[in-house]
Image 1 (tube, helix red, strand yellow):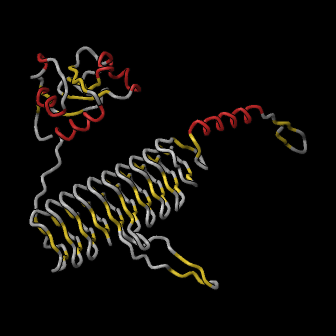
Image 2 (cartoon, one colour):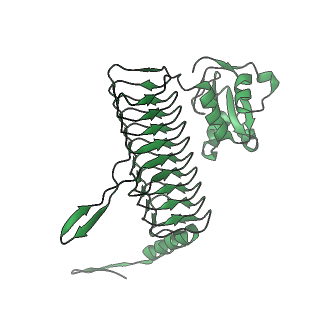
Image 3 (cartoon, rainbow, N blue to C red):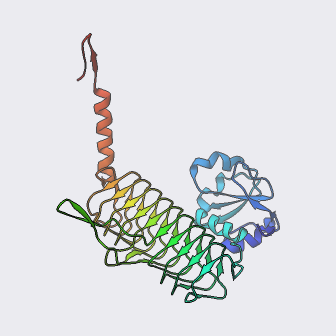
Length: 342
């Protein structure tokens, strides 16, 4: 934190209601419900932590109106409509992003044709090739490589050891360490016993307010561009194949793989370790459960699917219940010579 804040200052920042008699309480930091003290603030959103909320020693708790009665009487309550979203706003208010100190390190290698805004920051060991464009307030981390012709918008954070090739990135995006964007997709043809590489000539277009987790890879398009829509959030170790198109506001959890030319609708959420086959379409606001294998298009908006092959969640649950009953009903007969299951 940059300093201490009163509850009134925090409440005003997140749009919370508080008792006027508690407005002057000084908050020094955030802490979990079970560890917070009287000069710390916490939040309560998940019912799994109801017991901790009931005995918390926190000076204040961010909480929705329907859950406020659960919070210990000694804690001031910052009552909001969406407690988790307001927790995020409070964290951003109390722990603001460090101000970018512009400048170009003498240890960076930069082409004379690169266009770099005077307010950008280029850290040691960065390599920036010809005809690149880097916008105002953007940070290029140490050891990052920016390929020829790449364009990066304003107020982006490109962390250390990132590789950006054949890419155009919008404003206010965050790309974490180890991300690789714009490398060739998996394109090969077979002819008379030989495997022939298919040149990948497309690029990658990434929208505004996108966040890409560490060690994620996004292939360039084969002929058209791979597209990551505005406000998409990708976790660590996600693989996006060539020509994939993600709509606006998609959220993809760790270790998901999306094969080439698949299109994912706005607002879709994909659970961890799921795989999507190539050349399929996913409708808007679909939810794909963790470890699902999606082998065909999901055409219904807001559908919830699970399993392998992925099916409607209700159908998957019935199948799992049937399998459990079958396993429970099996009897093992043993003899001196063999073992069989009936």
